[in-house]
Amino acid sequence: MKSGWIVTKDHKTFIEFRDMPVPQPKSQEVVIKVFASAMNRGEIFAGGAVHGGPEKQGGGEASGIVHAVGDGISGIQIGDEVFGRVRGGFSEYAVMDIHQLMPKPKCLSWEQAAAVPVSYITAYEAIVMYGHLQAGETLLVMGASSGAGMASIHMAKELGAKSIGTSGSQQKLDQLKTIGLDVGIATRQPDFAEAVRAATGGHGVDLVVNGVGGSVFAECVRCLAFRGRLATVGYVDNQFSAEIDLNAVHVGRLEIFGVSNARLPVSGRAESAAGFIRDMLPALQNGRMIPIVDKVFNFDQLAAAKAHMEASAMVGKIVVRIA
Image 1 (cartoon, one colour):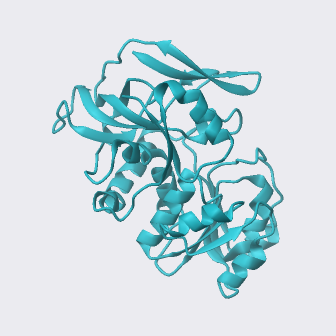
Image 2: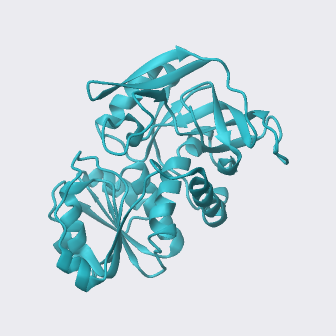
C-alpha cells in the first residue's frame, strides 16, 4: 500500500511516500480502508511536543470502512463506516484501536468525518475534561481559525457558554461567527486583554484555550476571571517560554494546564475518547456540529496540504482524500 511518512531533517519536516505492507490488526484493533484523513500542525511541527522519532507514518485521524477486525472485538463488522484517531492515516489502510472507533454520522461526508477526531477530542479535553466549562461562562480561543479553535467554538455553543476568539484575519472571524463565535477580536499581537474585559463587562473569561503559544501567554493570564483556567494546546509562534505573573495566579486562584498526547498512556486516550463519544458525538450525529473543511487535497498532493497548513491560511481543517 502507499503510505505518507513525515521525516525530520535539519529541524525541518518533509513528506515521503513509501510502499508498505497492509497492516494486520492485533487484539482490540481494527484496520480500516482509509477514505480521508486530516492534517494536524503538531505532527508536521519540528519542535515542542512532537513525538515519534525522526520519521513516522503521518496521519492521526481518518474516516473509512472496516477492512479487518482483530481478536477480542464484537459488534464490529467488515464494511462498517467509521472514523476516529488512527496510526498511519496518510495511508491506504490504517490501524485504529477499538476504543477510538466511532460510527460515522450519516450527515457528515467522509472528509467532514476525517476532520473531527484529533481537533475535537483535543478541544474536549481542554474544555470539558480539564477546563470544566459551564453554561453561562465565557471561553477565549486563541487562534480561533485552527481546527482545535473551530472545535472549541462548537463545544462552547453546545455547552451553553459564550465564546470569544482571536485571529489576525477579520474575514476568518466573520466565517467563524456562522458556527457560533460570539465575539471576534482581530489581532496578531498580545494586546487583546482590554477588549476581552470589555466584552465580558469587566469580569474576564473563565477559560482560555491557547493554541498560539508563549507570545500571548501573559496576555491570556490578564484575561482570566477569578478561578479562571488556562489550557495550553500548542505553539504556532514557536515560543515555548513566557513570563508568569505568580501574584495573579496566587490571588486569582488560577489553574494552568496543558493538553498533549506526547506522554498520555493508552488508558488516558481511551478515557478522553469515551467521554467525547458520550458527551459530544450526539451533536455530530444530529448535525448540531458540522466541522469546517477548509480545503481538500488528493493523496498525491500531501506536500501541498502541508504547505497550506504551514502558511496558516485555513479556517477549520485541511483534509486529504486517500481513496
